[in-house]
Amino acid sequence: MEDQVSRDAVPRPGLRERARGLLRWRYVLPALAVLVAVVAVVWALGGSGDGSSPATSGPVAAPIAPVALNESALRTLAVKVPQQIYWAGPRAGYLYELKRNPDGSVYIRYLPANVKAGTPGAKYLTIATYPFPGAYDALKATRGRHVSLPRNGIALIAPNYRKSIHLAYPDTDYQVEVFDPSPAEVLQLVSSGRIRPVG
Picture 1 (cartoon, one colour):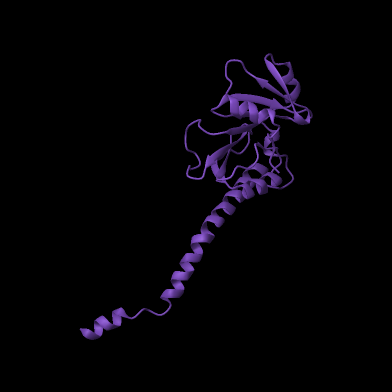
Picture 2: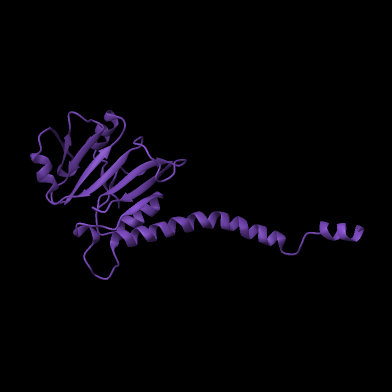
């Protein structure tokens, strides 16, 4: 019996090495998860890469369920996809939830680090990019208060819903909607010219 106890008390060979290996995976797995998410989103946004026209050129695009990306992953993705994705620039401590609908519209929602992708609710800054041929002229012709933006852009402020502002730029076939729970914050953000393509 004494022999049995003393044998069990002796550390098994390789246990320490196995523990070190597990600790390494603790850091590798999150990075791997982000990489897999970026590859999946690039594939879905960009089509098959066989030279066919981008998904946004037709009436139906491959939808993407909400996925949380860090700044680096979002920038990598934006370089590889054949459509513009607008955002408000980086924010410390935030992840960027990307979602795409079948109509090609892409949403970037700013999530605090402790909030999971897909969390319901309209509590967070959200930038939507809608494919829209002739977006600038259409927005200019729409009734309402127009505000001139840097880079020759135009914004439309609806009198009945000030948490959301639509904007467009000449020679770009996208309309952008900026939403924030605070009307003052959304106006300041749009007026500052910080809404621009990721890149």
